[in-house]
Length: 253
Image 1: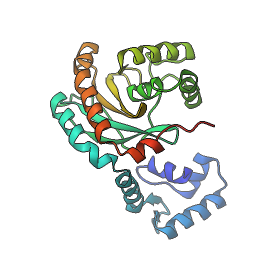
Image 2: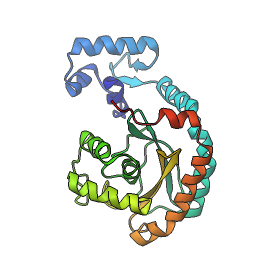
Image 3: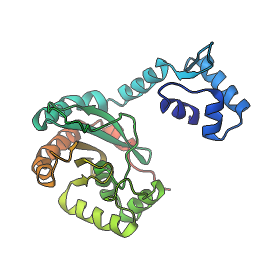
Image 4: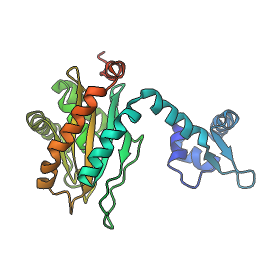
């Protein structure tokens, strides 16, 4: 998986030696793994240059998995409606196996400025800096929530990021009281967001997010949009597959 992830981040592909250096893995081991992936159809190697690339089979596999979850297709009408109403980028993140990941996004109709909000489906949610992560953590027992945040790391993304447990504890208390979370340039300078939890049977299974350049998404505007975001989250909770809700619950060990 480390090799696949490295190739995902390599827009122009990578050589075996580059992968070995980047991952600190023996070159012969990388070659064997890549050869196996190539035989399985997940990697292709340029015969002339030796550069390795991921094939569309990897993309197809990811989409097949998202389709299996059912959440992606079920959520699109609600996400489209929210994007049209706000004119901003709308995202859906889900909880699975003790982590959170973005699975869908819809671009709003607003003309974006030179500063664009970048969103990647399949990317993990940074729990301490992103509004989606905060609403999930706020729905968990405090000790578990703080443990997950610390495990992922509290390194700063911007000067506005939360970087210690006490700050995180206070922030999560506010999120619980408000019922939504804000990210005011905490994950990326110039970008702010608001998120509301998708709650099924008392468990936060996902989050609906509206994100936009901070020039438009002031705190007051984010709070004005919050009822729309919460309504979308409630709509998704009504149609959320119950079996998915059960499997998304965090595992207690």
